[in-house]
Length: 373
Ligand SMILES: [Zn+2]
Ligand SMILES: [Zn+2]
Image (cartoon, rainbow, N blue to C red; front, side, top):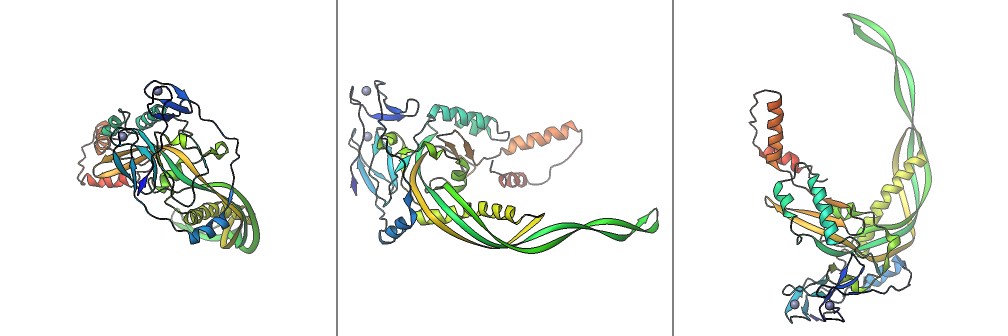
């Protein structure tokens, strides 16, 4: 399906304009002139989750391959069905298309971290990784490795009411007699031992959740998206296409309903923590929790993320930087050579002669299992 390509051009020289996080305005690469992005005073709204889910039941998303013609070089190229903006693969001109999903983003956080700042942070972070392979450190010397994405997220609010059944454990001490062997002789000794007394308990815990954020994209793993949080949603602004210029952006591929199921899991962790506090005592058992969710609302938002990929020994490692706060997260490979060198150094230091007979794969597997930072 053919889609209209939107882009913004410089009033001075006609060259394409891109959003610049440094000045928070549109900037011409060619003549450096800038154009302000006017802000609407529209407040950021919450929308009823119930109404939206009812609407989505009868409106099913279509998968459309988007075909776009570049406004600059006229080349025709394809975008993935969920892609909204990108750069022309031939001349790098920013291209923005329409959203086609039922729910479009109503608000967003524009990039405030520039590519250069992200690169510097990324380099510093990699430098702090002891066992990272040198190849990885070299990879980030070029500027082309970080890609800026606006990735869709859902935010959920809910007032929860949770009824629970559980048990409160109280520790008490008893004096017991035991037989001990002391200097080869059996002796009776008394000692204190802890016991626990359980008592059935039930109660109610109420919570008020504000902006539980859930990644709605499959481009980056959920673990990474979760690690990029927190996002300062107090700084959300009404959605404006101009901020997408020059950046990649996507529509949601994880639905509003599935996102809410994930949000419930996050809320449940907090509810259970509060239930434990409510039960009190020295130890707690939670046997049953029934939660009702009231006044549930959602927002569809775009968050700015710098990403990098690194292929090493047939595996792909992904990194991401929060484009608002600069927080970095990612999977990391370990350099086997560096680990072996360190082990060798320790052996030398202690003067022993040790043969490492195990297959080196053993070390690699062990370190791969703790890849997350
Ligand atoms: Zn210009
Ligand atoms: Zn082009």
